[in-house]
Amino acid sequence: MNQPNEDKTLMNGVAAGHEASLRLLYERFGALVFRNACQVLGSTSEAEDAVQDVFVQIWRTADRYDPSRSKLITWVMLISRRMLIDRLRRRMIRPPMGALDESIGVPAPQTAYASASDPELVEHFTKVRRRMGELPELQREVIDLVYIKGFSLQEVAEQRSMPVGTVKSALSRGLQRLREKFGIEAAG
Image 1 (cartoon, rainbow, N blue to C red):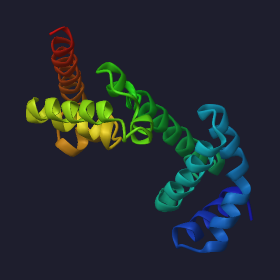
Image 2: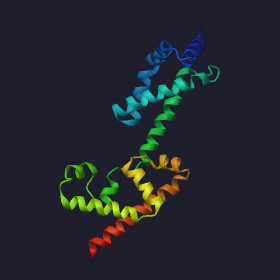
Image 3: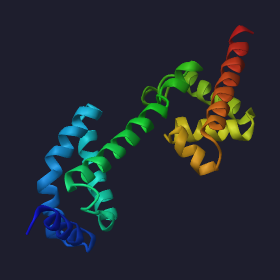
C-alpha cells in the first residue's frame, strides 16, 4: 500500500471516530505540532492547549482530507498554522486585564480583593461601578465584557453582531469617559 492510500485510510478512521486511528495520527504528528506551537506561542502550557485544539479540529474535519491535493503532513501543518495564527490574533486584540484598573486609578482585581477590608478601596470601587453605570449602554457592556468577563474584542463583536472597529471605539470612548469623570472628581 502506498503512502497516500495509507494516509487516506488513516483519515477515514479518524473521521469515523476510531480511537486507534486518532492515536496513530497523534503519534505521527503530535510532537511536530507541539514543537511548532512552542515556537509560535512561546509557552509550553499554551502550546499544549493549542495541540489539543489542533487535533480536535483535525478530527472534526478529517473527512475533508484529500490525498490527491496534499500530503497528510502538509494538511496537518496547515490546520496547525491556521489555529496558531488565530490564537496569536486573539492574544493581540485582547487588551491587558489590568489596563482598565490602571487607567482610572484602581488597583488590579487580585490586589483589590486582598484589600477588600480597606474602606477607601471599597469606596473607590463603588465609585467606579457608579461611573460605569453612567456610561451609555454599549460602552458599559463592552467594558464589562472585555475587562470584567475577559472576552476579546473579536468575541464581543461576534456576540453583538457588529464590526470589531465599533467595539474598539465604544471601549475607547467608555474608558476615556471614565478617566475624565475620575480626573474631574480628583481635581475638584
